[in-house]
Length: 458
Ligand SMILES: [Zn+2]
Image 1 (tube, rainbow, N blue to C red):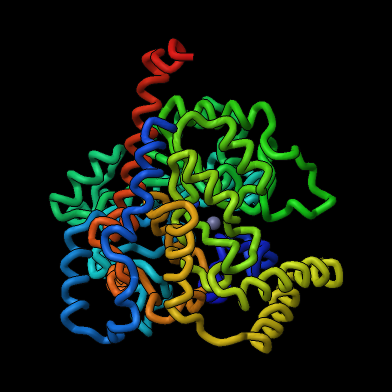
Image 2: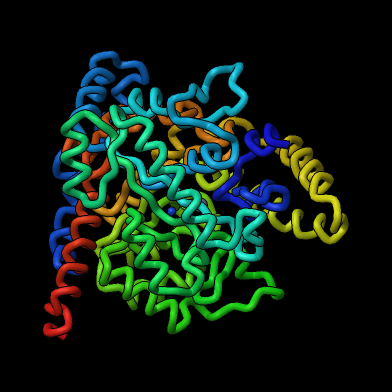
């Protein structure tokens, strides 16, 4: 069962692909607005893409220039679900998750994080919706589960001080990266983790949590999720409730980034209307390329740009590849039907979906599709508003584009952006500077709100 879980660890796709039924655990303002808009045209000015076709796929000189630039950059990944194998399967980041003989196979471990030139990782504190109703003897409820995952991250930092250091601020990230270590941060995935308590939210901040994804695939008591928005059996709120708006404002006040990945479209717009700080989408891609509701429409991308925020592209092929996004949606509908047909046999449901997916598999997704999402978001929102939120270990082991099989492959993004003619400065923005800008801005808004300046201004 464990192996099966690990072979299909769809933390972030529950309800969007096959994984959800089975796996309990299965399945990321304004002051600089003007500046952001201005510099969003800098890509063309500083390079353009005329040279795309003239660069061969295998240009060793360009590859080594890309490698150098990558190592000089602060590379930030905003969503990594390695925490689930850490807490559920006894994995440790010092293990080799790519060893063919390994019991637990992963996209992420320390050796490959270093090979990938990673500067900062936001470990996902993923709380499956089932934890809401679990008893303490089963590892529940939701806040308890979040605490357990937070402890697992702290424990990894304690065990590997030569590689990892806890970061609380954007300045911490820069300092830690300069010192040659990887900055470790956390984002809660699933707002039900705060159990409707702003006090609990504040305590999570004190434990090091620096963003919260307002929903997972489940609508909670105060925010609608994209994952069940069409399910008539779920009570919806038409976006954010009044308390949901309080949550957003309190996150602004304490300095926790608001993450709109996974939320329903109306929730997204309610957040944009409520927040005083820039938002992030910790792991979302572009709907114009792959029409899946987990992805962001062009209108949403423009709204994030106006807000000063950043959209971190998800690497999961089910969200990147239009052929697979369609399959993912069809398998979501199919799963609902199968669950009704076999209400007491989740294994059967899973087997039927797996067989159907295998029979309909369109083959590997080329890396160019991932790059096209970065291009598109850069074009619509501006190069100041795109980054990377891999979702490694939150998606099936083989659910990634060719050439991006695990976290060690991150330098390829830099190489591919160079091949597409992006300037060094713009590449650094995508790799991490955009996220660092947003994080600093969130810290500034919090400090203003806490000192009362924001209130005075209003
Ligand atoms: Zn997710």
